[in-house]
Length: 310
Image (cartoon, rainbow, N blue to C red; front, side, top):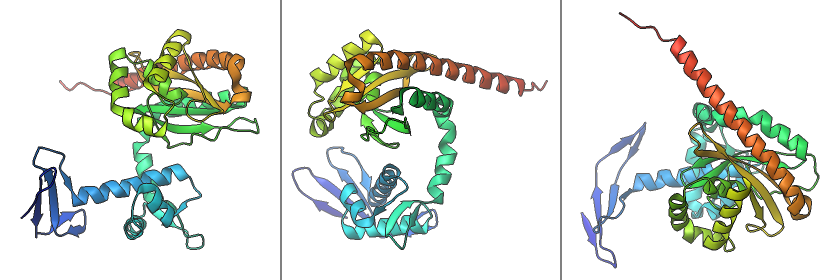
C-alpha cells in the first residue's frame, strides 16, 4: 500500500494478485481514489477507456483508415501506448492493419458489435428512404443524428448532386447539444430547465471549441427554432457553413433525433433556408408517424405471439 500527499490526497492501493478479464490475466492491479471521495479509476478501466477512444476515432475517419502516429496524436497517447493498443485491437479482430499503407481501420469484430446494436437504431432504418429522398429533392447534404445524453451523434450522411458540399459533419461525429443545426434543434425541444442544465454542463468544452456558440447565441437560436419550427445555424460553428435542422419526436413528444441539411452560405441563404426549413418540418412529422406506426405494429406482433397458459 502506498500513500501520496499532494494538493488532493490520493490513496494508491496495489495488489500483487492475478485478476482475470475474459482470457487475459492482469497483474499489479491498482485502484486510485481521491481521499475527498473523488472518482475511482483502475488501471484496467483506463486502458479500456483508451482502447474505446481509438475505436471511436476509427469510426470517424472512415474506411480509408489512419496511421498509428496520427491515432496517438488525435487521441492524446504517446507512441508506445498507441502501438500497444492498436496491436491488441488488431489481435482481437476489432481493428485491421493494412501492411502496405500502414493504416488502421475497423475490423470484423467491430462490425459484429455494430450489428448486435442495430435494433437500437430502428429509427434510422425507418428514416433512410426519407433522408435519401430529401437529398435528391434538395441536392444538398442530409444528416441524421440521434440524441445520446448531452450530445447528438450523426448516424448517416446522404449526399445530393450539388457539386460543392458541406464537409463539416461525418457519420460517427458527436456534437454538443446547442452546437450545429440538428443538435440545437434537439435542445430547443427540451424545457428551459433542461436547456439551462445542458448549457452549464457543456459550457467549458463548448466555449473552448466553438467560441461563437455562447449561451446568448444558443438561446437566440432556441427562440427562433421554437418560433419557426426549425433551426437555422448561420455559420456559428464554421464561418460560411450553414445548416437547417429540425427535431424528430417520439410518441410522447420528446426529442429523440434530428434531421438537418447542410450547405455553404451562398447555396443555402436566408430565403432558401425558409423553404428547406418548411420541408424538414414536414419530414419530421412524417418520420414521427412512421415510428409510431412501427412501434404499434411491433406491439401487435408481440400480442399475437403471446399464448396464455391456463
